[in-house]
Length: 323
Image (cartoon, rainbow, N blue to C red; front, side):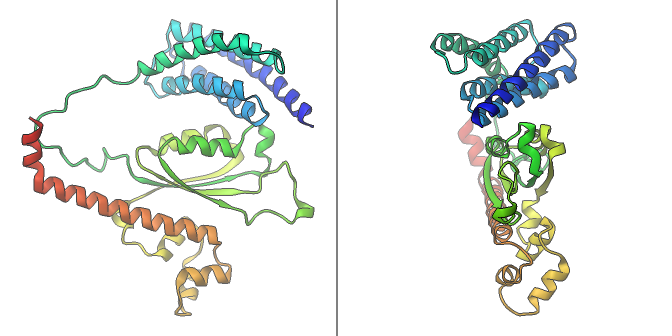
């Protein structure tokens, strides 16, 4: 069975490499075409995910670095250049060699792969803006528009057949973790009885809380190529307003329970979380996710308030020390 899957990946990879070459040739003629950049990014992304799933770790690791550079091109941080095109053509040939020598001695290819990755890393490093000296004077409190260190509530429900498309929810979640501090909550309540279980289907879905240093668009990009294979919800949690929200309000916002369900539960005059889980209105994982969100939001709001008060009280002194 493993050989069948590995051969299926080889066949898919051959098609992806042909698509990659076609897109690169077109991009050489039209370097400003974002659609071609997306085609190349998608080919690398699929090679990475499928390669890791079917045991081609060397290909997965290599294409991940190339994908990262093209993600910077997609984001406008890096322009298409002759150097980038030449490196990517060579990367395509390198992946082809790794496929053709699967199971053989690969040590001879290590130097080539290392050299190519050094070139891609050099391009990626060039995207980093040069260090700038901070302007004199006290630091200002970031405005609400400038602050991208909020909390995002993500619900990711893959369709059962997502594995058949060559995508792995686990790898997508690994990519999500690269964006910031992430709390994950796996839901197992949709797993059918063993006699009805399809071992090749995905029956698990996830709630996630992403804290700090990212944007909604960056989160959405993680799931860019599985939008048709999942239900995806991304919500911004306002740390200022949400810090005062009660557990029931958070559960209603998340879609885990209705307001009527909250009202019925509260009529028993017992702890809301206990009542909702015991009655089956929400799962324990949904309750755990909501409680974690409540705690994160409270901590974030309190930290922001403390920072603002500190800057207001000590701004002049900080400004003097920085000059």
